[in-house]
Each structure stands twice: as structure tokens, then as C-alpha cells.
Image (tube, rainbow, N blue to C red; front, side, top):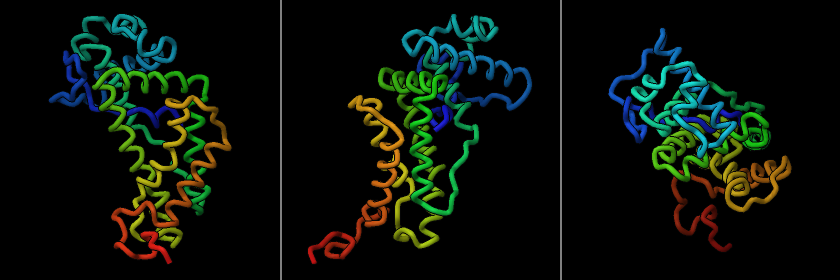
Length: 232
């Protein structure tokens, strides 16, 4: 997973300390876009070097070359900076694997998650966003929206497998992706256990086994059916 996989949010409203979405979207080009991109780049750089606790509007303004008054007027707070940086990154494309085999595709996805958090440059920034989400409701909303979007963007790898007949027709594609990556986040942010390629592959394989067994369907199978696990 590249850094962009962790980044998404609602656009910040100028002057809103909670980074809530604004009424007027930024223009896609021109000076407004350049200023926004510069502030976003500075926000990511500051997060990578200092973490969420060390992020300040003043430092972002100085680093971006944008006047502090402008930054406060448009973004309002550290939370507004985070939300807008995430929203911009959410629109950036990222490759979804298509090997023709679901096992390989899921392993590729989980290895991307591993790569994103162990990358010397992207890892600290990604970790800082998760830390911000733990401590700030606006950042938490942003991260939740990001994961929901990215899981859905990854879902085609599962839908293709359904079309190939690898999985039950009513498999919940986004849920398969969630189940595949969840063990990695547990180790990274809860248990602190070591994580490596073998762990990433095992998480992918477990999700695949659950999906093949019919455990990750969009609706539970009828009671007493073989897929429901009734005793035979």
C-alpha cells in the first residue's frame, strides 16, 4: 500500500476548526489549486518529520511559502489541514492488482499495506494520520471515509474472482478486502507484534479461505443450509 492508500477525508471549510466540509469546492486549476497543493505537501512533510503532535499551522505556512493568515483563513486549524490533505490524496489513482488469480491479487494488496507502513518516507506519515484519527474526531471521520473508499476501490479484484467462478456469487467483495488487511492493522497499532511478508500473505490466504467457505457473503445463507455450517 502506498501512502495514498491511507489518505482521504472531506474537504475543509475555511475557518472551521473541525475541518468539516465547506460549501464551495476549490477550483480545479489556477492559483487556488497551486496554493492547496503546496499546503498539502507541506502538511505531509511536517507530519512525516514531527508527527501529529508536532504539526502546527505556523510550520506548514512557513514550509509551503503561503502566508500564515491565508492558511488560517482557508484551513482554520491543524485538523483542517489534515482533512484537506487527505481529501486531495483520496483522488489520486493507485494500482489495483489484476493477476487473473484471487490468491495472488489478495497477497499483492496485503503486501502493499505492509510496504506502506515500512517505507522510510511514507510509513511515518501514514502512522501520523492514524495517530491523528485516534486523538481527533475530524481525523477519525476522514480515516473512516478513506478506508471505506479504498476497500470499495479494491473490491474489483474480488468481483473478478466471482465472475471467474472462484467464489460464491453473493460474496461481499469489500468485506473480503477488509478481512484481508485487518490482521495487519491489528499488529501494527494494537498488539505491536512483528509484521513481515509471511504475515501479509497469511492474512490474504485466511481471507480467501473464508470467502471460499461462504463466510463473507452479502447476506447470511438460509438457516440449515450447507453454507451456513449446519452439521452433516
